[in-house]
Length: 123
Image 1 (cartoon, rainbow, N blue to C red):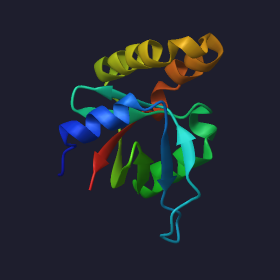
Image 2 (spheres, rainbow, N blue to C red):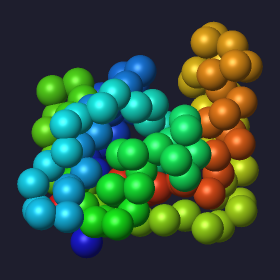
Image 3 (cartoon, helix red, strand yellow):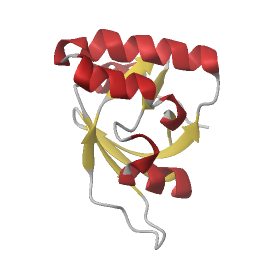
């Protein structure tokens, strides 16, 4: 498994958004959508604002592969589900800390969407 470099982690985690493009069933990339990203240690995580109804999330969960772009970094990634409650608690805190300035109407749905947490693993 490949890991993120320190520079990649800093640049992506420092950005407000990344562009997410999961693979479709036919193997082509979906149209990229902007989503929020948070860092925990040496890992990057995303969640679906719309919960399990989010189209990009359903495609990412089905294909487990895609492409991200942020802060000049272009990477193919694998999506890994995160059922661990302790990690999700830290990710909740990361969302509140990083995006709290946008208000509860945006942050609370992200915190509530714990079941959609995906770890981004570079290929």
